[in-house]
Length: 234
Image (cartoon, rainbow, N blue to C red; front, side, top):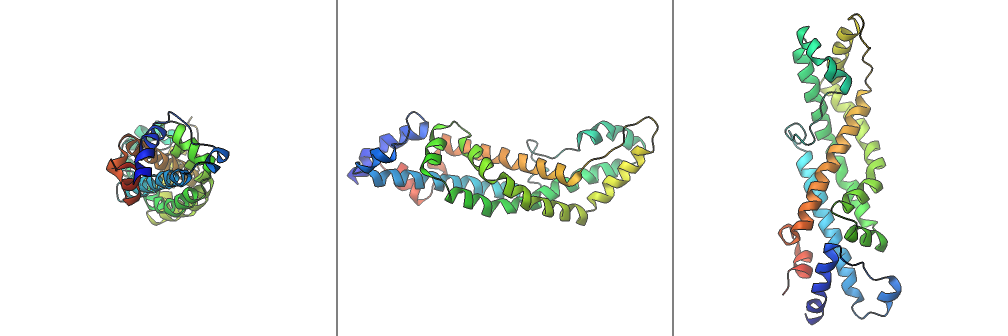
């Protein structure tokens, strides 16, 4: 009890990014070294909470579509063509394609859960220090660096399958054929799988950054037993 009380002010300063964690050499002679371990575990627990909430927010109906910050818009080429396509009577296909892209991203978001868990579990002491002191989105940047390639590999086949099941390809092909028949236009050649996958990942990490900021600003409101033990005692 007394040991936790002594280190609590230090922990609060660490969370604010004002100092760095001790080096391994310094910790070797520190009787409170186990306190540093508890700090690291508290950070990992906070990241687990943040990533879990990110998946919950994105892997649900309208998780992307109803969130203006991450809603997947039509590819730039189609955005510039959409008004003309609507004039050609293809407004329903334009809307259906946008819906299909967002539904594909929502479906794929579940894949982030296990990958984030692995990235958090593999954090080294230097990673913990960097996240503590690296600014309000340091954890998001760390997780993106560690997991984005794996996420992309897992997302792409799910995006493709979902686009197929909701006729996303058919809607796009109909729009592309109609547009490409018009005189003096640049042909539409969108890689729909890649576009939706990249937009889905950008949206995922946007939401994760929001969750990280919330945890950093008010950690006790996003608590678990471990966070209550470390940060909640007087």
